[in-house]
Amino acid sequence: MGDYAVRPLRNGEERAAFDLTKLVFHHGGSAGERWEVEREAFLGGRKIGAFAGDTVIGLTSSVRTTMRVPGGADVTAAAVDGVVVRPDHTRRGVLTGMMRRQLDDCAARGETVALLHASESAIYGRFGYGAATRAKAVRVQRIRARLRQDIPFEGQVRMLTAEEAVEAVPGLYRRFARRPGMIERPGSWWNLYVHRLLGKVNGLHRVAVHRGVDGDDGFVVYQATEERSTDDPFAGAVLDVSDLHGDGPAAVAGLWRFLLGVDLVDRVRAPARPLDEHIGDLFVEPRACETYRVTDHTWVRLIDVAGALSARTYRRAEPVLIEVRDAFLPENEGVYRIGGDGVERVTAAPQLRMDVSTLAMLYLGDRRAGSLVSSGRIEAEDPAALAHADELFGTWESPWCGTSF
Image (cartoon, rainbow, N blue to C red; front, side):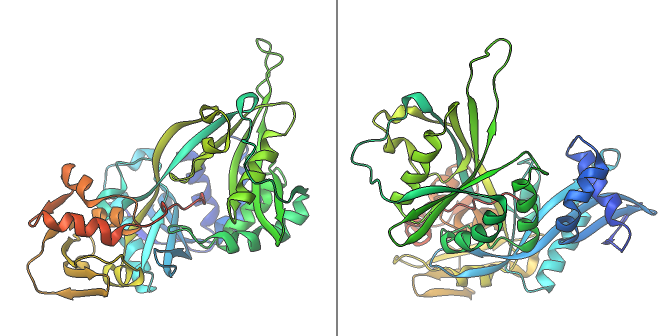
């Protein structure tokens, strides 16, 4: 393995590993202050490090959770974050060694998939991850955003104190986390959430809850970013929305009505929303809402291909025979018959051939097989099978994670 060793962190090595993540991600501020705030969440993950002697030169972390798949089932998952290599040890196989050890560990734990948010999109495909969900960033000009008169106006919105939000929001999120790609937020995630509410991490966040006729049915977490300057002393603030979930259109409309009613604000900005959420349709002038970026959101790695494929449901269509290649976890390789009646591994000749990273792009319903053929990701031995694959894997709503980690 060269001049380094890969192994789990031992007691007493956590602080050095934490400092390494802040160095690689260029996080400013006092490392000591950040450690005191983020220590509990950092220790909540499973840490695998790369060491040159006693010095930590790389780190990858994961925490056990679940991910919703089409059909409503939840699969066991590893949420991966904090993947770093010290700048003077890159391109020496350190990352490959850590990712191999981590995937082997996840497989040994019986986890079906791993997922992450990629800081660089060129990195993770070679380890079998594929961009399985996308998200769009939107901004709404407050002065132009007049809600249509026929938009339902039911219920009320109330702001919560930090203490109230800590008690209320986790339960609300669990009720609303039904879209494919959404995850159960682990305890370490909620620990950092508390610090965001208290202003100890990334500024002070506010929480508001929508209450409908049957009780609380939506919430939003946001913070204000001041944009006044000497050149523009009358500029209003921007509300940055980090979390918005509603159980139905009335709750979502009510939360947006609330955000756009906050005084001294010019714009509301939401950097990661579902592709099929069309906020502009709420307004008399739809162009008051601008989509300014669409990008990959969650990358998924199918650790147990047979288990992952069997966990989700499929639309009714002709079965498709897919050959999966997986150099990193070769036990996944083979031909799978996928149909509305289930999944099985077979010895028949395949109709479609693809790498496991491409299968991940199809898995939650975000991408179409036809488009992946045109980009060279799928080899079609039987072109007619592409339409069947599109129907089988299709979902009625866009997959989306909605949780940063």
